[in-house]
Every structure is written in C-alpha cells, then in structure tokens.
Length: 471
Image (tube, rainbow, N blue to C red; front, top):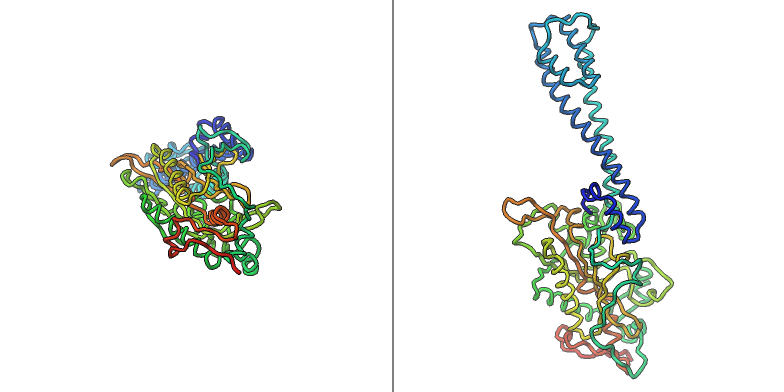
C-alpha cells in the first residue's frame, strides 16, 4: 500500500498520480480515506484522553474513599461536586477535589453522591468501550479503502490508457523465414503427441491440458534450465508451499482487488498460489533485515492457478491462457537506492534465458494504464510465435518499490541503530512455461512435422535433438 502520510499531506498530488492509471474509483477513495482518517484520529484522541483521565481518577478514588478525616456527609458533598465536574469534562477539577478534598461541602445535593460517583467512573469506562468499538469499525473501513489504492507509478512511466499504448522496443533476433506455412501449437502438439487437449478438458474442464511424453520432458528441461541459470547468477532456489493463508495475498497486493481470480478452499481460508511471488513476498514478513543482507535474490518453480477470464478471441485455442501452469519466478528485496538498477538486472536475467533458446523476443515498457495494481514500473518480454502469428508474453518484470513491503511489514536498517525503512521488492517471470513451449514448438518446427530441440536443452533431454511426429 502507499504511505497514508502522502494522502494526508498531498491529497491533490496523489489524486493526480492515480488519474494516470485511469482508475476513477481509486481517485474517489482518496477523499473517503481522508474523511475516515480524520474521524479515526478524533475517536482515538477522545478514547485515549478519556481512558487516561479515568485511570487517574480511579487511582485517586481509592485514596479518597479511604480518607478517615472526612465525615460521611462531607464526603458525599465532595463526591457530588466531583460528579458535576466529570459531567462537565472538568477532569483536573475532579482530580483536585479527590486529592485535596475541602473541609466542607455545604449546599450540594449530597444524598447518595458517593454511589453516583462510582457509577460515573464506571460510565467513563463504558464510554471508552463504545469509542473503541466505533474506532474498530472506522479502522476497518479505512484499511479496506486504503487496500484498494494502487501503487503510485514512477515518473518515467508513459501515460496511456491501455496496452495499445505500451512502448514496444525493437525485437532482438530475426524471425525465421519459413519455406512452408508454420503450424500453430494446437496442431503441432497433438501431431507430435506432446499435448493432449481433450483429456485435459475431460479431467478438469476448459482451459486445462496435459503435457505428454516429450511435452512433459520438454517442460521439465526448461524448468531446470531456468533454475540452473538463475542459481548460477546469484539466486537462491526455494521450494515453497503451493497453498497460502489469506493474509499472504493481502501482503503481496493480490487482495482485495483480485480475490475472484484465485482458486480457494474458502472453508479453511487457504488459497492456491496464483504466482510464487505471493509466497516469496511474505517470506520475510514482519522482519527487519540488515542492509548488508540486501539484495536478497530468490527463485522458485511452482504451479500457478488462475481463474483466467474466458473470451471469444484467439486466446481460447491452445495453451496460451490456461487455469494451471508452471512458472519459474524471480524475486528481489533491495534498498530503495538500488531497486531501479536491480530492475534492469532482473530484466536481463529473464532475457538471458531466451537468448540461450535463440528465439526472437522484444521488450515492452508498460504504460500507466497497463502497469499492474501493485507495481510502480513494469517491463514485459514477448517471444515470437510464428504459428500463432503473434508475440506472446512470457515474462513480466516489475518494481513494486515499497508497496508490498509496507503491506507485509518488511523493513531493513541502513546502519546499526538507524530507524528501520521499508525495503523495495521486485518480481519477474523467469520464465512462464506454456508460452515458452509454444514458442519453441512453433519456431523450431520443420516441414516434415518434426520439431528440432534447442541445443541448450539437449543436455537435459539425454542428448535428444528432434521430436518426431507420431506415425
């Protein structure tokens, strides 16, 4: 989440920044947050003040009752004056009457005053409880609205309403020139007996699939290539739980916005990972790290589950958009001063694998309307798929700055004794398997229907160089 101090001190600037995302509901929430924050602080002040005064009066009450120098009539008279002072919120006067009682109290309504004083003090406690209950409700409303505010974008992010306005950099690598019409993977897969669409649907419904034989082995080889490459470049491999608690999704910025996109066991309040990013974000939740530990570089291979929205367009065919897929995820925790440099390093890390595969790819710098909810800046990487005749996103590399760290309370100390600061977090696919498999099958297909295996993968496949079609 963004720093609420920014909303308090620079609300108009925050609104202007949020407008760059073309999210009017987020802009409107700024005023709601300001009103709730003002109400919260007023309630908190009243509650804490009343509780403090009650505590002082309760302590003084014991001494007042035990004062043997006062007769019953005088004590009741003083008690009546104390009650009046409390009702008028003259707490110092009430305290002074208890600690320095006058010698007489003529002219006061004295009958039962001591009992009324006891009830008045009890009433102060009940009022504190009412205020605290009201404060809980306001706190919940404030937090809910705050959680719906997206991250603020970096100044370099181009303002644009949709993906149509992303900045596309020149491709790296030349698309292959075929002397035959390249087939899409949804034809190649069954012909090679490496993708079984029908049985995937039979088992689990639409947008599920089975990788078979060399299809499954090719995916395993890709995963191992990615993990080995990242490990050699300073990333620590993790094996993570595939199921997480609800607060982990809030910490990573998935909830509340993307709640309906995630598969869940709602009775147990457990959720299947939409991405390993969710688990790794919370790895150092509620911790204070030392600056010399940073950057922390992690990598993990996990299945990912998503309730991808269906469409009538070209994404329906094949394995471009599915409910379950494997993804190797990179993740960094850095200092604010180094996060932009680490962002570029992470992009190069993902691109490096594609270079090894020798397949054309291109970099996109996402515009303001296309940057993800919790991210401050994002680069996408798309690989060329000649059978589909399109560029397919295989990696999204993002800098979340302090957005996730503030939600998950991940901080670091720049030096011994220094005030803790929030780390910056970065994440990126390195890579997402289904679309890489698509790109390999379609780029390396031959006229006879076979597919040549990229050289870098052959050591992971026992030296096999070609996937032959079934007879």
